[in-house]
Length: 140
Image 1 (cartoon, rainbow, N blue to C red):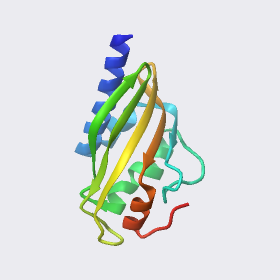
Image 2 (cartoon, one colour):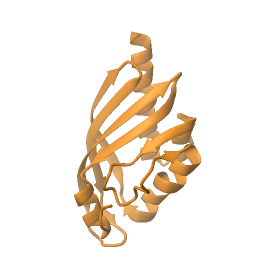
Image 3 (cartoon, rainbow, N blue to C red):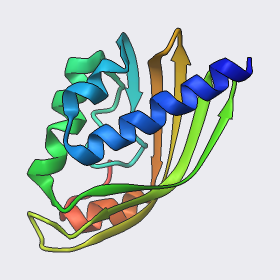
Image 4 (cartoon, rainbow, N blue to C red):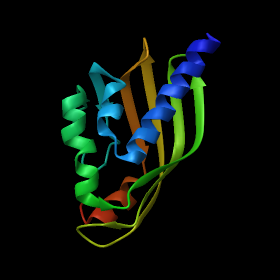
């Protein structure tokens, strides 16, 4: 069990590091073909249902980040593992939203579920009010 927990933490840490480098293919490589990506309720980018599969996550989330934000980064403050689940607490930071010029510094938590070394489910929790205000959008 310890090996799996360590491996899962390493997989998730490497995904955040790849995202920070702008290496989106490396991020997508840790996703299962049927990953369920659940944006936070109230997130302006939440379509009302999860994104299914790496391509939907790419189009609905990852490709939109550089379009919407300058200087976007995820600060990982804490990473907790429990079997095949990894929970990350941190903050979203961005220099400015392209639409409004407003900066972002929002509290965030991500819950990652893995199976056989691949992410099968992701749940985002974020300060959606702050996110929407910075983007100049309303929450769902």
